[in-house]
Length: 532
Image 1 (tube, rainbow, N blue to C red):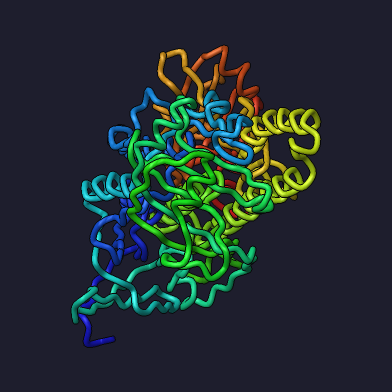
Image 2 (tube, rainbow, N blue to C red):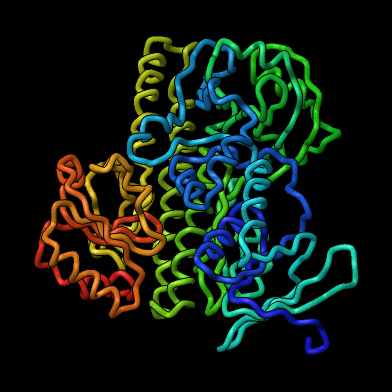
């Protein structure tokens, strides 16, 4: 290793997909030098990871990439990006709206978005190239990772060449996918749950399918419940408007590109024949995997390297981005000296339970619920009973959207609910609750609170005595903690947030909320950066 060319940096990120580049942008904008190692020179043209939530789009706003991302959209905005669930076939007559993320729009600063992952990656790469602190090595792969008490060493190699070198850094983050080399070589183990299902991914062109589905205006993805598949979906999604599609569905074990009639499978899922021109046929195993820890010393994992699950509901890429943002303020806090290294343990404390509950309470539960419904109700046996239950499922789909509210209410660094843990299960409310995402608010200045948040912590004071705000300001200086004070007299804010003082973390989650003007600012701020 000593004979290889060496390069020093603060953080090495192995894996330059959306999560890795998102993390690099987060770090770079906070003044942290990082190097991204990515084996592909350009994004791979497979249209996965399409649904970007309102929360994810808040990240793109703060990364300075929201406008560019929306401009890269492949489906005209006026068309809509909603979803639909159908019984039997897409044209079978029983449908309801699915994954209606617009129902929780009032609780977020931005609208959600939909575009292929490769388009998202291209926007992120462009933004990363604008940040001097971010260095990208495309066309390079990591071969070996190790760590000692002072830092990490990563041996990397140029793909298709003989060039090898060593990157030395304080910390390493593996964003290198479900088969993560970083995870394996650091000794982080996984819990895996196999569903013994082989899945196919088809990418194809068809103008005829677009014409058939014009009866469902504003829909971009379609989930078909087939009784024979026992709760596993046939899932269509638009890549663009009118031409290109993708399709996920179970296929028999042992299926290959040559021994299965994929065209007939598509026709049976839709309930009609249409033109099909295949662009890609690939396979994947339906399984869930969760790392036993997201940190091993100076090495961290994020995104699919830390957790993976079937692409049901668009949770994967959004969960990965939230990993990046959570770790993306904690690493700078330690590297810049305003927090101790113990803060980094809260990355695992906060993020791992959120994925575990996402997998268990949303994805796996949905598969089981669909299986029960399909086994129990059938319009050919009892149409009226089937239709009553079908209508009930439509209402349940709306409730699920409200219930998916990742939060850190039991985290050791928020003033929330000790012992309650962190979870994806919650409820959307405007009240400022410790450990929960901050809902937007129009200030008396006419600006949204999100437009005034600082890069570090922010303290919103709504008609609060100046001495109280100054006490927090002085405490922050003593702790060297970056804090922006936002003063306002907004009556609607006091009513909506149910608090006059709200401390907001760099990731836009509430650390503390109260109306107590005698609160101890030093104690409150210290708790937010020192795990208790």
